[in-house]
Image 1 (cartoon, rainbow, N blue to C red):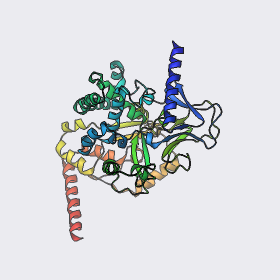
Image 2: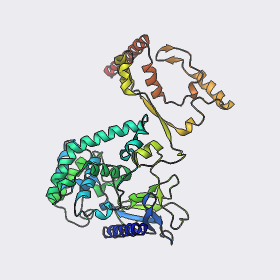
Image 3: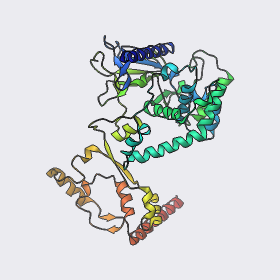
Image 4: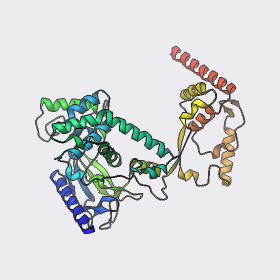
Length: 442
């Protein structure tokens, strides 16, 4: 049985590699093989290429909102929803993945067959495993996320997919929420924030279009994309347009605290020899043959890694603790209306992320160096002894707190007594009056 599985996996990889090459992608000095974490990229036994470029993928192969909006079947339906603000650019990609998964003869099948069928994030937990998260931020966040996804699926996705599949010659009975959930997990675990060259997103001449003459339909599509790509109102010909998307091939790189590669976009082809491409670049001085090629997903704590990607890292140096005051508890506190207005006026934060490194010795370390103690005394001496509730002596432990000041402001506001609320409200009104007078004088 194991031999059969290995043979099937090798066949999948070969079909996918052939598909990449047909679409202009190149594997240089690396291969794609199975691993305990799924399919991954490994250095060749002979070592990396001469220029340390391991993978090159044309940007034309990336799955982006622009690709969805130009799709013959999905484009017209998605364009109207997108223009009316009913969906965002992420929804477009997730819908595209769901549709292509269900299409009987999808041209994306070699890529989709390589993707996991299940994921390790909490949306895929069994009921018993999910209950283990109760009392954590992940538990509430996952419940809310699943509720939103179910609502989105029933309101916008299900009927649209059935309509599109009928037009494409497919079957309505294949559509289910699990397909949409799968596509959502694919997007969040594999999408990159891609810095696309302006000339790639909005080609202006025949060279940018690959030698194809411009047509009225092409110009119309350019205008639609310009109106719909996020944050493009002020971009010019030399600017970068940041767009979220999936890049088949490069998205098989797994995360590591000590990555051996990084990805870049090459607008001119000066590095990769392929204009308008994304390439994977080795940063290891001496790449080890057959070693997995990893990148960094960023400085993420285990809570975020589990929520988005479905894994955690033991002794993660980027781990953090989220401390928050539950918003749903505010209506039950005394003078909740007044305090709610003050919190809004102060733009106070009711949650904060504390890096694990700050908590190694607890919230109030027992021992501190004499130099630090002297610095703290000097700082305290220079500080003004004024607070929201009037004059008071600054406590000796103020400089040992690791909580951000805006978070502490929110907690102090929640804990205020009636007379303190009156004083702060009066101060804010006076400050607003002074600001208004200054504006009038100008």
